[in-house]
Length: 115
Image 1: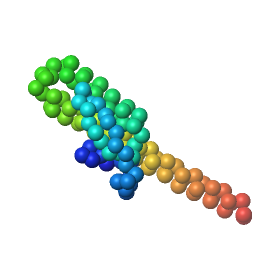
Image 2: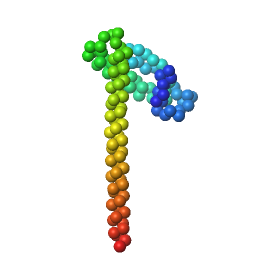
Image 3: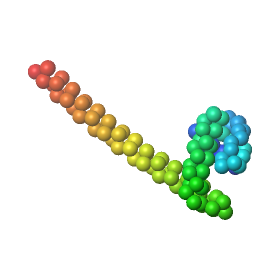
Image 4: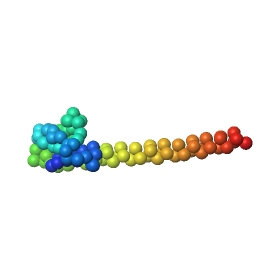
């Protein structure tokens, strides 16, 4: 997703003409963004960020530390994304190994059946 100035795009190759302007609110602040993403999707993301922001603020962050709290939210979300990507890659590699193994077994069965 691309952001202009906060532009969110599911496809980096999307033309600007395919992007629409949406308004989102994060932690009480409203932003105007251009995105090809569905507005409801953007609002859901905004709610997640806001909820996490408030959890961090309730843990003792002072109002003058809003930037620090938002940075902690971003780091937490990126950590979850990284872990998710690692799980996805691991599952993909496992599926590939399994498919290769099964193809080898099928080839063996076919070779034995033709004897």
